[in-house]
Image 1: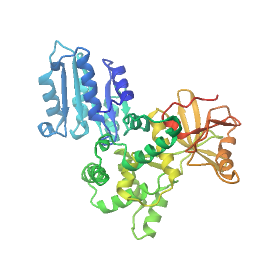
Image 2: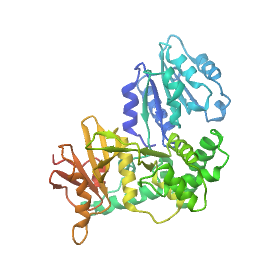
Image 3: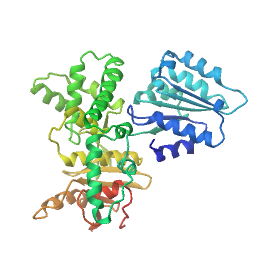
Image 4: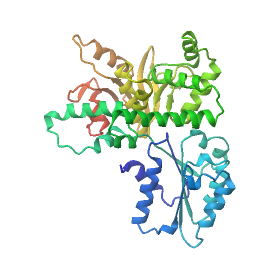
Length: 411
């Protein structure tokens, strides 16, 4: 079992705080395991078994809990008024009006409440109103590259380290970062497992619950987006491209499908930000997939721009580190990512390689960063096996070292 220490530390930090702890993320990214790890931590810290109430609403013994009242009554019967109680409810969005039950449990002075959900809309609308200021969201993703590497305990000679890490990166992207996928050795079985995750999300979470009858069109949109990660997309462009290829679809339908895919954390959407004008732009978005292995499972070995795959991996890592991320518009140029964090803004350009015969690629990738006339940190991340280099204040870093978070800064 992979510890997922950063997420576990978040739960530990919020323990006994008067907040509902809400863990969100795509199915099978490890939310249930995280709750189990935290329960183990509580037991090791002296919490008795009868102080822990744990419900997985997808399991057979709890699948008949369908309403808010049923959920509240089930939990309330197990609460011991004289003891501190820790309540864990997995996939809470499966219960109608669940927020009413959660709020009723939250107001009990001896209850500390933890829930998980696989849909972003569980923190919108009525829930956001009812529980405003009463919850904290912990956004969970499949394994980071650092977590993935940590599962391998091989002794590697220093001179072979780069090639070893590059090989792991290739398996990380192609074979999936879902935790359980690591336990499946056969590639065919692994792809079948990933297909199962995709089918569950698309057919159960989206088609059934949103009452989408044309699942074939939904899957066509999903395939299109998986094939265009890192490309600027508008709903009109998507609709026009699909229509011209024989799959006629309206802009409204595309918008609906994309909302469903982002709500279920299959895709992540980021917009553009004008660096000079300091404003968010309404047009031109990019989408990234929650797991590159999921893309390979759906599209097979279809040729792909490895730079966009790397860009996707960097985006997910920035999201894990808690940044608010946008595409940067610098006059007529584009910076891959502006990352807003506690220390202000940082700028990232991502390229698989900048090594060529005349240096044109390096010049092209540096140009958008050089056009930003402020002193915020600027980074060029590449797969090139070069030492950390400084280009007029821009740090060129090997992306594998950056992903492992062990690359020192020059400035």
